[in-house]
Amino acid sequence: MTTATSSPAEAEKVPPTSRRRSPLVALGGQNLSLIGALIVVLGLFGILNENYLSWANIQVIGEAITITGLLAVVQTVVIICGGLDISVGSQVGLASVVSAMAFTSAGSNPYLGMGVALLIGALVGIVNGVAIVYGRVNPTIATLAGLAAYKGVAQLVSDGRAQGYVLNDPVFVFLGRGKIAGLPVMIWILIVIAITVHVMLKYTDIGRNLYAIGGNDTAARLAGININKYLVAVYALIGVVAAVAGILLTARTGSGQPVSGSEGLELKAITAAALGGCALKGGKGGVGGTLLAVALLGALENGLTVEGINTFWQNVAQGALLVAAVVIQQRRNGERAVGLPH
Image (cartoon, rainbow, N blue to C red; front, side, top):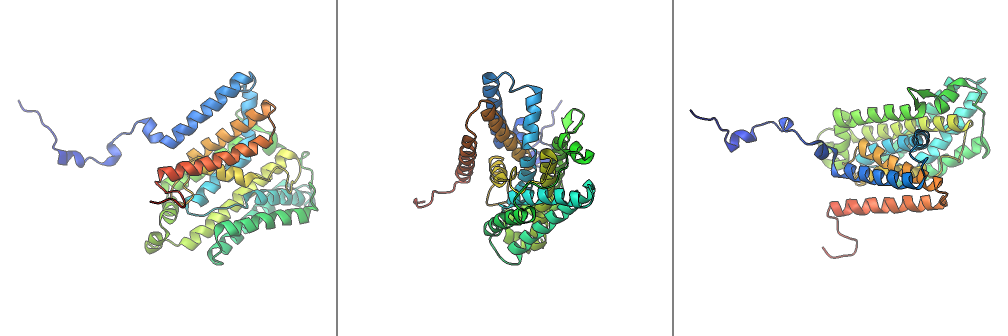
């Protein structure tokens, strides 16, 4: 009686997809590190304050990170394709003001207010994309200019003050304070957009092309990918999602906010994307890691607030985490330090 054995050559013919990876391997070292850090933060502040891990406070954290999470998700997309958008915070402020002012001007029509905000968001994103692609302006410089310009426009149209009052409107109240299946509507909106972007990146030709553009734009162009079209579309997507964030800011605060609530969001979004594993040179990253980083930043910020620690330390922590994320990326990629020999 003989036993059939497979030769090494036959073993190599087994399709890679049939080889099962353990859940930990599939999750990735970057995400495991973030999960570990999140557990440590939750555990530490949970010990310091018994109310920190209550369901009520968990929902507070979830609502607080929604706007940052939306921006971080689309920031992930633009970083993957080798770009950057520093103007997202100002875009949120502009959309917030526009949604409230259009709502008031249209006789308290929430749908018109939100529609105008989304339209403005798309136009702003296209302006960024066109300046970068056809004006050949560096993405950092172009969106840095946008950061100042869109903030200025928001302040001009609003006279630098909060505009409109939406707390009497059931649609805005539902967006800002409503719940579905026990979870705030704002969190559901983040979940839906995050899943949509994740599916696009991982399971469609669009996502594969975006990774290709960020990994090697020359090779992507030679492969027939219309890089210009993709980049303009990505920045338009950022504008639309930033407008959604602006509408949620209006719903949450009860009025259009030109600056308050949106200032500094760009730093949070970029920090979350970098912590989540996005390579700032492009071609690498994912929505899952970014959301874990957003949760980590939100848990840390909430814990510092609950413990009464000066809020200025939150900015220090964000800056330090961004630098740490970049240093880790450089080490993993084998990049040499500037000025040091090979």
